Image (cartoon, rainbow, N blue to C red; front, side):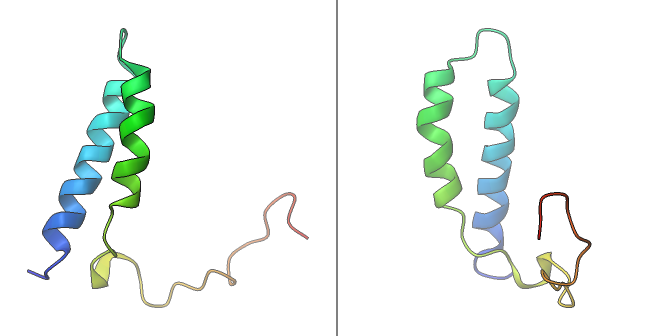
Length: 67
């Protein structure tokens, strides 16, 4: 397993669980607002084969509002 794969997967899992918690009735949204940016910024670089290598960010379709 690559060195960052476990950290990446664990952080993504925590972000997902935090999102589910935020949607629960009675969730402490101050906690969610305090923790979510820290989790997001702590994401390591994604493992190498996470995204297709032929992914071209400029080759996609035009979106409304783009010039």
